[in-house]
Image 1 (cartoon, rainbow, N blue to C red):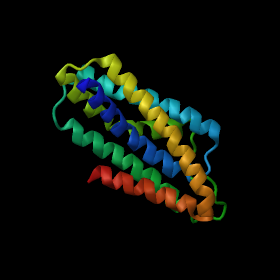
Image 2 (cartoon, rainbow, N blue to C red):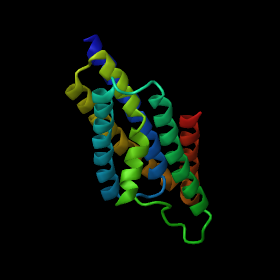
Image 3 (cartoon, rainbow, N blue to C red):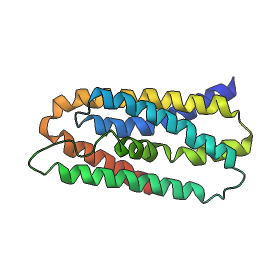
Image 4 (tube, one colour):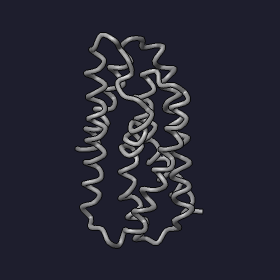
Length: 178
C-alpha cells in the first residue's frame, strides 16, 4: 500500500506541472477541442518519457536530470516570451496554437522533466506499466483541469489574460531552469 500511495503522489506532482502550464494557456481562450486533444497528447508523453527513462535508466548519467529540466524550462520560457510579446500586438490573437507542432511542443515541454523521474524509478526496479499508466492518467486529467480553470479565469481577466498567461509560462520556465 505504501508503494501505491507514493506512486499516486509522484503522479500528482508530475501532473501538476502540466496543470500549471495548461492553466496559463487556458487563459488565452483555447478551443475546447484543442484542449481535449492536448490533454491526451500530454498524457501520452507523460507515459512515454518516464517509460523511456525507466528502460534506459541504467545507461544514463546523473546529469540527465539537469539537462532535461533546463530543456523543459527553456521551452516554457520561449513559449511564454512569445505569448507576452504577442499580447502587445494589435490583433490580440492566441499567441501560439495547440494544433500541429504546437501540441507536440507543449506536451514535450511539460513532460520532459518526467524522464529523469523514470530514470530513478528504473534504478529502483519499479513496475513500468503501472507507473506509466498512473503518470499518464494523472497528467491528462490535470491538463484538462488546468485548461478549464484557465478558461473560466480568462473571463474575469479580460484583455490582460494573454499577458498573464505568457507571464505564468515564463515564470514556470525560469523556475524549472533555476
